[in-house]
Length: 348
Image (spheres, rainbow, N blue to C red):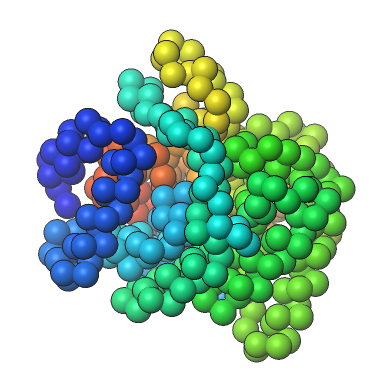
């Protein structure tokens, strides 16, 4: 899709309420995929293959969780150009999420604030949607979380329920314990509860691998609002417990860079250009602690090919887009792929 064509589409979508525009976009993508016209509009998926943890990625640019919450647009996103797609966040039971309005554009700052609250139809519905994505042939990640009504002391059971359900259809499973939009969820990022949660997940991972004969890597997604001390503590937990992969970072509670926008006081997580630098710093800090033993997916404020390159140079192996994709469209995927191929070639 040409930048001019996406700009025209965006001018229409940005006249709509953000959540309505999101639904219309996904509906349009599903329709175009069903009619088999997406490849004609988008062109070939850009190629930059890499293998990580036994998974073969078509390129290093993925779709971050939160865009395809219900996992019902997987095949379409694969044809848009992403090398891998992460769906969710999915929870054990359906939940409506937080009250509307809950999604806000900060256009001058190329940012978004959301307080969606894991709105989804539940893990069972998500898995059925994934099974129906028969024309998707890339790497699929399933992002899972706990229900809002589940107390933190019982959170592990929610994650284990989702882990078991997602296991047959996922190439990797991402643990979302860092969203700012579920009350108390980030408390699970403290070293001790994080260690307990990860130990439970790794034990069940081992059991499921023995039962099914397939290994599904577990990633954990961390917040950008962490201190260097916290990064060091979490890194020790991840290494000690054998975490397979890390996703850095989720949205931020900071409002640095958007103070002039009247929307800056809206509650929720901030994403987009204001997060670019901080996300890269967190990736670099984790990479320094992990010393290459755990691969990192870099996400947060990737608005250009140069931003993707910076994430790779900081220590990420793969990157994901969300807000940058909203503002720039599919052209950003190709730009990121080409920039990383030129400046950070994969050692094959």
